[in-house]
Structures are given as C-alpha cells and as structure tokens.
Image 1 (cartoon, rainbow over the protein chains, first blue to last red):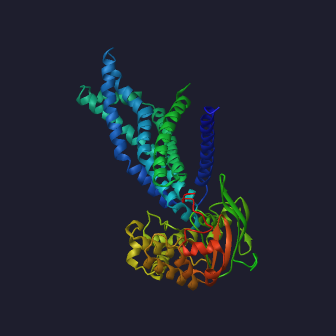
Image 2: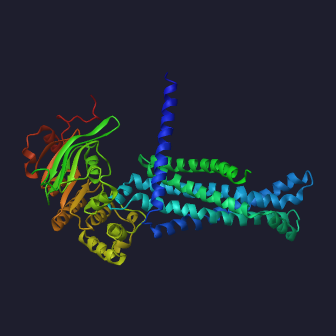
Image 3: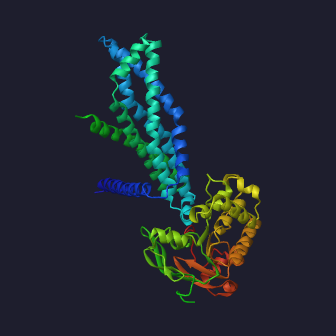
Amino acid sequence: MPLLAPVGRSFLYFLNTCGNLALFTAVAVSHCVRPPIYARLVLNQMVQIGYYSLPVVGMTAVFTGMVLALQSYTGFARFQAESALAAVVVLSITRELGPVLAGLMVAGRIGAAMAAEIGTMRVTEQIDALTTLSTNPMKYLVVPRLIAGLTMLPLLVLVADVVGVFGGFIVAVYRLDFNPAIYIGNSWDILEPIDVVSGLIKAAVFGFLISLMGCYHGYYSRGGAEGVGNATTNAVVSASILILMSNYLLTGLLFTE
Amino acid sequence: MTAASAKIALSGVTKRFGTKHVLNGVDLQIGRAESLVVIGGSGTGKSVMLKCILGLLRPEAGSITVDGRETVGLGTRDREALLCRIGMLFQGAALFDSLPVWQNVAFGLIQGRHMQRRQARDVAMEKLAQVGLGPDVGQLFPAELSGGMQKRVALARAIATDPEIIFFDEPTTGLDPIMADVINELIVKCVKTLGATALSITHDMASARKIADNIAMIYQGRIIWHGPACDIDRCGEPHVDQFINGRADGPIRMQVRAA
C-alpha cells in the first residue's frame, strides 16, 4: 500500500499540528488572563498593529467602497434600482468587506512580520535566552501580540467602515450625480447598530487569529532562514483561510434567524 | 567528589530525538567554583547536555541535580528561581535585536529581579566596563556591533546578575584567534571574580586549555574521559588523543569521510 502511506503521514501530521495549535492556544490564553502583563510591550504592539496599518487598511477600504459603488450602480441600473446604491454600499462595507478586507490586509502585513520576528528569535536562540533570563517567552512575546491583535483590529475596521462608505459616497456624488444629502440619508436610514457591531465582533476574532497564527508559526519555526520563510508563508496563508472560514461561521451565527 | 557534594551532577542522562540517541547515559560532576570544559566533536551532544541542565530540553531518563536538588521536571516557578542563579553565554550571542545593548545586559535584572530601570542601567554599564566596553556601546543596537563585541556583550549579560553558575556554549566560535583569546581571558577573570561554577562546551582546544580547571570529553553521547586540564596530553585515551591533536586517523570516524 505505498500510495496510502503518504496520505496517512499527511493526516497524522495534520492531527499533530491541530493538537499542537490547540495546546499553544490554551497556554497563550491562560497567560493572557494571569499577571504579569507587560503593558509596555502591549502598547508597542498596539502601535505596530493599529497605527502603522492605518494607511494600508484605509487605502483598501476607500478603493473597495469606490469600486462597490461603480459596480452596484452598473448592475442596479439594469432594473432601475439605483436608489438602493447607498444601502448596498454601507451594508456591504460594515458587515463584510470592512472586516474581511482589513483582516486579510493585516494578516499580510502583521501576521508575516510576527512570524518572521519570532521565527528569527527562535532560530538565533533568542527565545532560549529569554527563558534563561527567567522570562516566560509566552508572556513576553505571545501575550502582547494577542491582546494587541484582539483590540486593534476592531478599531481599524471602524476606520475602514468610515473610509469605505466615504469612497462609495465620492463616486456616487461626483461621478454618478447622486444628491449628497439623499445619499447620506439613505445610508443612515438603512444602517442598524447590529451591522456595525457584527463587523467589530468579526474584526476582534480575525485580529486574534492573525496574531495567533503569526506567533504559532514563528514560535515553532525550525531550520534557519528557510524555516523562517516557511513560517512567514504559513502564518499568512493559515490566517487568511481561518479569516474566511470564521467569517462564514460568524455570519451564520450573527445573522441567521 | 560525590553527586551530593557536587554543585552540578548528571547521572545517567539520556536524550533522544526520534530514533537518534544524542545522550546515552551521561555521568558528570562539577564541583563548587570549578571551571569544567566539555570537549567533543560536532553532533556529539554537548549543546543538548547544556540545554538539559538549563531545562530547555527534558531528558528521557537520568537525574540532574544542582546543589543536591533534582531539577528534572521542576515546575515553572522553581525553574525560574533556579535560572535566576544561572548565567548563560550562547554560541551566537543570542542578543535581543530589538533592544539596545544596555537593555540586553540589564534584561535579567529588570525582568528576573524586578530592579528599577535606572539602577539596572548603572549595573549594565558597570558590567560592560568589566568586559572592556565603554558606555557609548550601551546605546547601540546588537546589529551595529562586530562579532567579538557581541560576544563581550553576551558575556556582560551572562554575569549581570552575579550568578553562581555560568554556562558558556562555544564562546570562541567564529572569532579570530586574538579576539578568542580576549574572550577566554575575560571568561577566566569573570568566573574567578564571581567565584562562580563554570561549565563550558567547546571544540576549541586553545580555549579549553585556557579556561578549564578540569576537562571532560563527550563522545557518542557519553563522557569517555574526565580529569584535570593539565593531564589531558598524557591521558592515554585514544579518542581524546586524536581529538586534541586534530588527527583525521584514529578511533573517531567522521561521518563525512568516505567509507
């Protein structure tokens, strides 16, 4: 059965990885709720994730809002439903596109950076050095990143929502000749608190997953530069897939009657 | 010397990775304020032995005691308390890239001993001076230093907390002979000043002769010879003889050689 052996090996490897990840998550979360928490490091990570991701998230959101307005108008014009444009833009941005696109962009920027930094620390024995200096690497490296990811992504998504809706507004008013007051009124009327809150809940989950994948793959990277490279790729790919999967599950949970 | 009276004692320590047995029952005792150097070729288990003592790896079998107290399987708090008494110089220095030099040196004082940053900074500068580095170096980042300076900073970090035990992992690897001798002299000076117990691992015989009171040789995961540094040239052990003279022919067969 030589064909079955690689399948079995891959399956066992998958189970082993799932077990390791579950243990890593449990230990990391348990450290998140037990002192000491390194406030200075948490703040530093918040700046890295929140402040420095603003340009990339803002640019993504504004162009997404603009394209959404253009495409929706083209489609709706076929059956005279142009008036629904504002509603479609604001709901799409706040419920789905804001959190998902911000999550994917931050996964590419921050998840990769975390995996590369922690992976390099692993292969150059800096994590062992932390341990010998009586410092728990989980508390020092992982916890600040998890807390910062969990708290900063909702704030970034809030910005993405505003900027994305503004992008749609610009196209609607200056290119498609919508009345600005009516457009804003339509957007405001259709928007409910759950639309924004659901996006923020998703963002918190995505932020946690991005940090978790970055830290996990970096922490267990092996084999020098190639190992760090693999860790970086795996962190981004796994975070992106988990974002899309959890987005479906959360949407089902939050919006299914 | 008995295991109970030794500062550090290893008894029957075994460690394997998959099917590869790296340590095959290591027995070793290190006395108080003794400087022991463990020599051996690449891949013989020197670094693994050191990591087992530090608790970075857990041996499958055997006992490791420090001051007569078993350390295998210690809980997190007890392990941290033990590590507070130990300094470690890593092969590649393992300095934290994101921190300036003085914070690297003061790291154990600030995080491990909860010393005030200002006070820890003063101690760090003092330790940097002890290894021949000026206060201006304290503001630099590790990437701005040469290999020799990084090793000095790593040595300053290892002695910053005035530890009872210091481990040196290949302290002279990658350094030119003059800088290697400078590091060796600093190691001797620091260990004597602190009155610390030192365990070094190396395959640099010049370094071993300079810093060791006693030398042990590890081969195929076992200690095959252990004695005073001055006796190594006439120990009569063929493996040791081949190793210290750097001969290709002898009982030690390198895997890279053709069969």
